[in-house]
Length: 279
Length: 279
Image 1 (cartoon, each protein chain N blue to C red):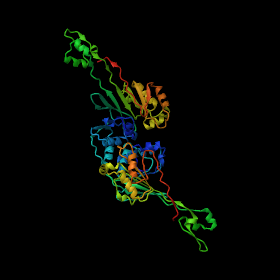
Image 2: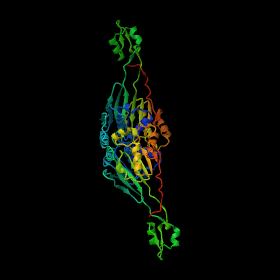
Image 3: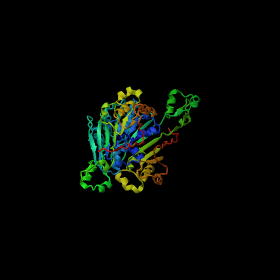
Image 4: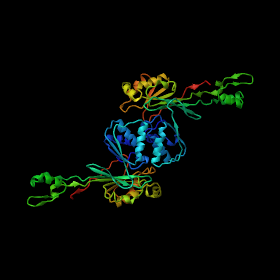
């Protein structure tokens, strides 16, 4: 999960998420709308009997805030709560398992703030069952073919990998950038992601206010999306002054057509990548 | 306002309360369901431009928790936030103005916990306009009559106060007792209040669980209400295990008939007291 504003546990319940399945929480920065709900979630997980470790990736001070609140209520968690500190100096690998990596991105805000990139790992290819028998491929060769090798028959004839394997989907990627002023330095880091969430607190006519508060306008977000050649953009974190969000969407789309609004309860699927015939 | 669990500011907005009209917040104890929403409310009041002082009556550690959270977000409040510490040893006067007093009540919970009694003050009586002329009552005597005196005419004849004034409503009182185990020591303090909110976390068949967790059962609450001769009882703070609350209400009513359930969004009026003909 990324960020955890006040009432997050209520929203999770409302949308039927299983909160105990959350093992990793990434907190971008310490403005309240991004973390005030964390202590409640941590407490509820405990009351519901959690025993498995929970990892929190966050600014160092958040540990003090959470631990102080556990202390004043005389609460001893029955699960391990592990804090991993963000550095806010350069992007780094925060988490990795067999399926994904998560990296930080340094954003530009009034206080230290980090974005996050989630990248699927490239999987091993699946070999076509029929070709194993057809070419009598031995076990060691199968392992190599899954990694992308061609197969060389006894007679020296080369069967290209593409003929032996099922095409893989391209690994998907998602970048989350909130809160931040317009920052060109993130473009290289998020280059080509399938889905970019970028804050758009203001419309373009509030550019001065955006600059003062270290936030972005719709056009900032759309320009970042365009320069980074991302496939889809979601804008969000709108100022409470905007009751109707359509104008923000329309303005962003003048620069970047494939833009959508982040609204409560909406879900987006990171579009499955194109088939890859490369190794 | 009494207590401030997570999401309180959202509920206040949903029910169209004007949050800036809240000047005094009483926090009973430092379990999360009673205070996790305070930092969000304090921050939102600031963002919406509050300038008037906000008073918080609470356990001393809450000040550290709030101030740490303001510090890590580099927030300087534009209004004065004043903390008043509860003592948890004996009931004391916390607040007083021309209309009401607020006193604390020592409750019995796993960590220090306080209840609160709100009492309207007895107002000055209104003098009947017609009698002023009829008896030619001079100004100094009017002031005395408003305070309850009779009027003595020049001839020595006594006009009783009741004939000179409009009957007053009895001042109303409300007591809030959550969270607490059954505690007879509160009975004297809440004696005769018009409305008592008392927690009933469990039904009677979970008495063991109530004892372990320093909570009350429906019958505990009803017995307190009965012994203290209160006029109406509201029970609340129900364990999440109870999806249907009717059985809790029915059980409490076996002991104390005038009982109601505290449910989200409900409001109760403290019934206006009987007319008072006494001085």
